[in-house]
Image (cartoon, rainbow, N blue to C red):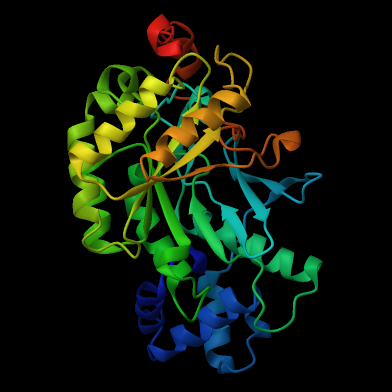
Length: 374
């Protein structure tokens, strides 16, 4: 069985080269060819000895993911649907900005967390992705975009990666960390730790592990100011309530490349968008002493959610309340919604093993109290 070299971080690739009877420095040459130049064929790798290329031809491969579809939004957003086999398909999204190009990467085929406002969660869960399947999304996006954008040597298409696609990244930790190391490696994509973000729904013990193993920027899906509402919106909160999550965020900042945690907050009409709830968010982060910024995300509706997007006026009023408390707050601009590539819309194709649709259909969301909606 041949090894997919996209599965290896630099250290693992060096060990693989040693297993072939080669020097460890060959891994650096291979890494550069694969990730910086986008080479798939070993015959292209002209500075490798022919004897090594012959060994690689029989023992290894560079196996990108088959692309099932590519859709381009009117705003420049690009969404790819990748085949990961056995009836599963995952999505990755590229979001161009004037000063950056951000790739949203998936970590699982589906998601087992089941957040109520997320289309992926309603699709259910099939399996974790391998390191190679995570890295292959970046490999394809970077080298495809370089060609289409006619970028010169040294110019990058992808400057930022956010692990905010399908899945809960920290539930696939063993594959996630090597993939992050590839993204950060100067011989591969050379991304700054500040420009790679892992988004989690709140796996406290794994946040602590990431702090020790590969601290990158951290975003936490918060979505509620108290445990009662967050239990409904983010079921993982029942296992890791807010006081535990906030403590993990404080600990993470000891090693994080940024001096704040980003809290993501999906704006749901008459559920979590009242001014009173903004006040309680302020109280929460002050009481727990967590330096933070808030990213308010207009909900992107999907069939069967039973939820609606907050009005622009309510979102702006909510943001002003947080800003008045001197908390940095942004409202995410909705990108790619015309191709179902906006936040919370990624669903792909999932052979669900968790009966998520049936479970989520039975559980109603409690609306905010009349006083909170005022």
